[in-house]
Image (cartoon, rainbow, N blue to C red; front, side, top):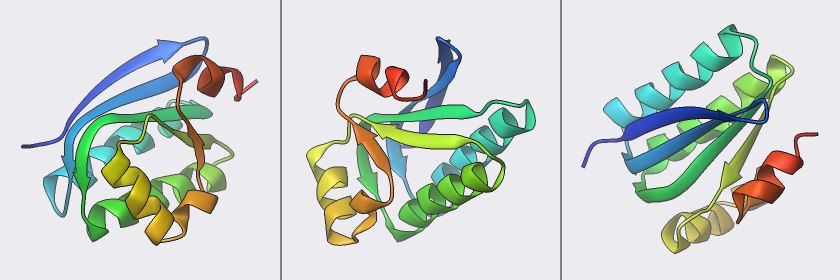
Length: 114
């Protein structure tokens, strides 16, 4: 199943609703392009909703870290929302859970950017 990305804005925060698999090739390129586009337009608050992402491979994980780094270097903030159990466990295992700001509900995630 390919990755689909729906973009919306809530209180000045760009929310990217991701659905599908983040894997080598198509999925990771889509995320990279979406994040770069937002930052290019001057967006400083980006929230990735991973509630419908059922699989991330190592290159997808690398892409999340790269997106996070790109955002930080440009003075933007990138946070994660609604991790599935699989993705949560993967971030725990790789110790990346300590790198990202992760939220379970959208309202508190949006509020955290203020």
